Length: 307
Image 1 (cartoon, helix red, strand yellow):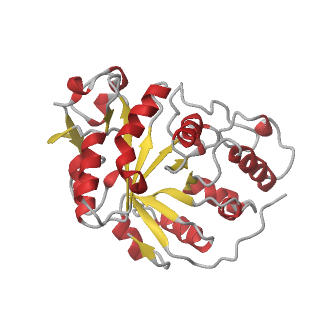
Image 2 (cartoon, rainbow, N blue to C red; image 1 turned 135 degrees about the vertical axis):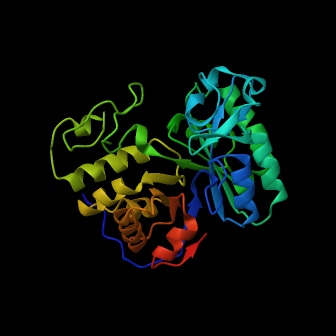
C-alpha cells in the first residue's frame, strides 16, 4: 500500500548548517567554523564525530587523516595526543586551525545561548561498544537538552535510547538503502548490491521486481522503521525522498504519521535541480533541510525558514 499523499501545506522549515558551514571561510566541521555559526545564532548546527581509542572524540568526517588534515593514517586507531597538533585542510591547503574535539565543541555550545540544537553525526568507523557510547554520553549529558546524536548505525541509536531515553536521536538509512552514485562506493560500506529497483539495497525485498516502485518504497520504509526507536528524526538523502515521491510514496508523510520528523540532505544551492528538489520537499512538509549554504538556500525557497 502507498502512503496517502500529503496535504501539500507549507510549514516553516529549519535549515541545518552542515559541517558548521555558513558565511565564513573556516574549515568545515572545525571548532572555528562551529564558533562562527554559534556566534551568528544558527538554530541547528551539524558536526561529525569519530571516536578514538582513548575515549575521546575528534571532529572529523572521514577516518583517513589525509582527507581533511595534514596528517596520515586511520584516526580511529589513534589517541587525542596523537592527532591534536594536526591541522585541517581547507580548499586543499593546510590551515592554522588545529583538529577539534567534542569536549571543546561542547564548551563552545555552553557559552552560546542562541543555538537550539547541536547535531552530532556519530560515525561507526570503529565498533561502537558500550564503553564508547558511555564515553559519548558522559560528555553530552550536561547539555543533552541541546544535543541530538544521529548516526547511520541503527544499533548505536537503539543502545543510546536504552541508556538515555531523553536524548534526542536521529537515523540515516544509507547503509541499508541508497542511490547508486557516479563514484564507486567504498568496498566495505553497504549496501553492496544494486537491487532490482535500481537502488543500492541488500534486503530480500529488492531481489526482484514484485510490484511497482512506490510499493517497494512503502515496504522498505516499513521495514526500516522497525530498526530504530520511535520518535527518531530521519535523515534521508533529498534525492531519494524525491524519487520516492515521484513513485507515489510520500516518505515524509509516512514518518509524520509515525510521530517522526524528517530532514533531507544535503542541498547544494549551486545546482538548480537541488534547489527545486528542496522546494518540492517543502511542499510535502519536510521538517528540516541540511545544506552548506543555509542563508543562500533560505533566499531561494518559497517557504518560511529558520536559519
